Length: 232
Image (tube, rainbow, N blue to C red; front, side, top):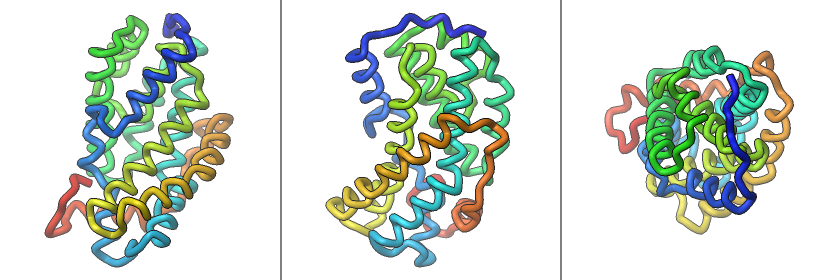
């Protein structure tokens, strides 16, 4: 399937990407901690250093890496005129818990709703008709960038940076670290996000997998956590 996109100017693409990655973009990311809330309760994450290690593991060996590979695969397939239904199904199937699946699909649906309304594009509408709205967030984000003729690498870098930033924001709201220390963790994540993006840019679906087992356990345990601020 062709996206049928018309390339936009560099400035227009950058402004749209900044808006889509903004914490104020209505995807509901603030409601999810990706299992971090349980990790904080158990003491796995207790300060800036342990928070950074936790996020680094997810980015390099866990769901962050897999999301990046799915993002890049979706983007390449659409630019090659190929269907992405199987990629979308695989992305949902890879969720390690019901909360992880809810986190990804609800953000994906919210992202598509906002983007189709504010940045309408016939190519994106066609993609949505093919895959539906209940689709994993990285697939939805990649579909929008491809439809609007954006470059893969800036979008992928931004997606991973926003992923890490949202986890840091969760830690700040859970009072593990302050805002200044949190920004230090965000800055520390930048080189790793770029490294993961470089790997994902040339990876295939056969490269999917991970070993951030403790983070997956955190997501499973969060489902039955007694007191919770976040939905995941």
